[in-house]
Length: 212
Image (cartoon, rainbow, N blue to C red; front, side, top):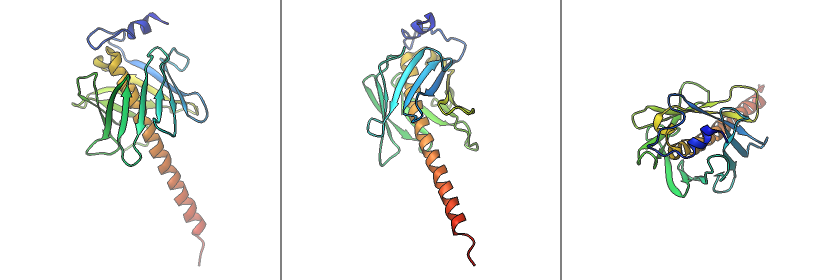
């Protein structure tokens, strides 16, 4: 393990971190074509493993394993009849809810930030790109998820963490990554369903045309 990762894993919210003054990049990759297994690695897809998670159709729906440099036990559970998301991080439980203004925005209370909220939202509501920002209550960007633009079917994207209070706290970083993966996955499912519905409607219209 690198000295950088060793130092990071012993951070608390008040101690200075090894990423002072520069962003931290974490690559997100699916390790199977079924997109059920996730690896999150430092700086590149071949970097040291930081987080590992599995996606399930049953509850809990995302399970973070106690492996990698984070050694984080965490779960994400989606509600069947609402947009709420239950999150458990190292035994602490909380619930994320849609923003009152936009259902596609999700707000999660942060224990690491003393109860202040983390909000995940689209970087641009006028774009079809699946990039998302994590902001605090003053709308200051803490981290960003950039979706992959290339041809890879397994590389999902990249988290870029920029805020000092996240870089200097393992707890807050864990919260950003776990809630971020929950938000990204739900948006991926929603957009995939919308695209499939649109394709089905188009095929139906084409098949029904041509009558006199």
